Image (cartoon, rainbow, N blue to C red):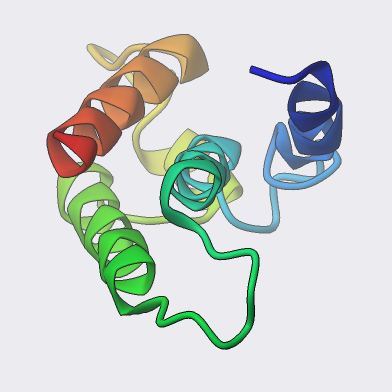
Length: 102
């Protein structure tokens, strides 16, 4: 992966800038991966397949974790008794992405 992609995705950690008020960075990372693999570079090219994958990832993420907002995930999923941390959430989100890409 190009280093610039990693740099560009850094601000999404902690629900954008660590504020925990916005979309989970693990979900954003999956969306970025879908775009990198299936995104278009020409606005005249049909992007329906890419958009469908993005919609599918969001839906699977929401079904699996119960929310897409970082702070609410931290309150209700991450770090609660018996629940793993953000690294495990990110690993599980990567698994959901893998299902879609395969």
